[in-house]
Image 1 (cartoon, rainbow, N blue to C red):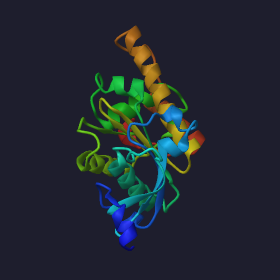
Image 2: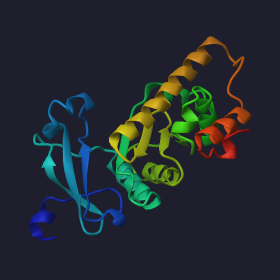
Image 3: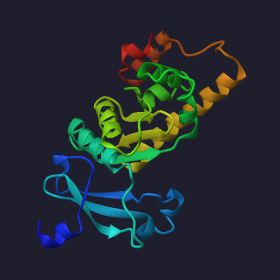
Image 4: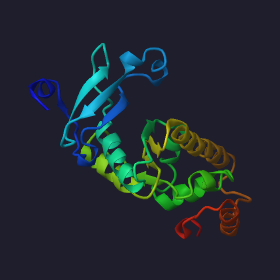
Length: 228
């Protein structure tokens, strides 16, 4: 790509050859999401990956200095996985510090089956919005390759992954769908937090056979491992 390109490139922290030469818009490290609308040129940037998917350069944005999000390795590895498993339909990877989801990581077993079933039970729309379930990553130091690889493995089968004591990643075809997925999961988590604060056990809930009927009516497939 030439000497000028190499002069301004930095390592991605991950190898993503399937994304070689592609462009991504990302938020800057330490930037506040509320400021993106106010000053996108200061808070976000567009990066270009090199021809091996190992380095990037900023081609626009972060005009006052700075770097892309510290979670860049996870974002890129998730993009690579979702590009492969969805034939390129998924274009957004969204990370947020979802308050109620984080709270649940202190009191629920950190298992995909537990989080999925508990959240599905909180609102009838949940198994329709995320029928494949959600994954859970046990606590790891954020920003590195290890947690990125763990999240990437979950994204092979889920569209959302919880980071214990930290937040969540969601993916989708566009930002509206991805934000809607994140919002639905966080809303269900808020309901569950309130339910758990009222009494130690539920008096009634949506049962496995109810989920099966729902799946049939809404034409979605719900994995049986979440229905026991």
